[in-house]
Length: 365
Image (cartoon, rainbow, N blue to C red; front, side, top):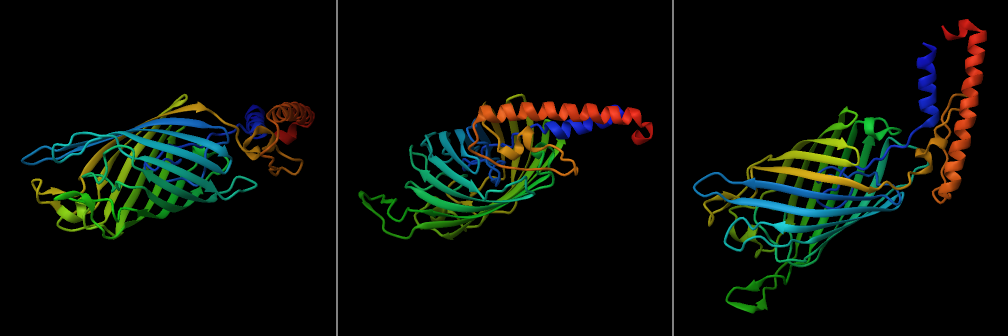
């Protein structure tokens, strides 16, 4: 009984920091598949992922759509991160154009600073989509304009265990807006040198994601995400050939495995509601019924956790309450030395506690 008590006390005193990067989303920030988390990666942390997905049709003809992207995510400060996502392979499912390089997505995400682990966190994100290759306005994909797009998102995250995020049940809620500067992005088929002057496309985006630990290295996740066209350029593929323009709403359950510094996340995206049809292409639906997703993530640099997630800040005081403090700019060597001194002090306190309990056996009952 006393040994169990010592183990519990020692674990609270040491307070090992927990990395809270979950995955790099399609938009380039820390989160699940598409849903963003208000928690950013640690300062100096560098992550890389390969995101892939695939779907195909059933019917008179088989149409296939695959996407491959590489992503990097870097923690500039404890409450600010930068993410880059470059689509290197994008099928164009219909027609005979073949695969091409897609856009570069840039994510700038910040979170509201807190002085201690908080169950509720608020963040905001600025998004850019920059055309790099020829893949834009692609069938069976979220709309990407052939010109630069910009957007923003508000992010709310709730954690049942803010001290140990790896054991926390997590809920993320996102709401945002994307403005596509595609007013003059399309040309007249009969006169390729003249652009078609119309309206810019704009979209509302939203999502909710849930993450639940099953084991220490296995997490279940599911998310509901959607896109709704507020305005749409009439020369986009969806507006030109679709029988109707419906919201793109998806349910994506999945699992995430951790293998050391490697993380594997896979899921199955299911279209929640029916959509319009491309009458020119065997009446195929505007959005696919399903999509298989796999993300491979690797932690390149661990980064420096905030002060309140280091061992020195999760010590027990004489009143048995947690003492939190912050000093984001503290020298790392000084922090390590302070952690060492605190552990020595904690060890002495445990020895004194052990001696007092042995002198008074009734105290351990």
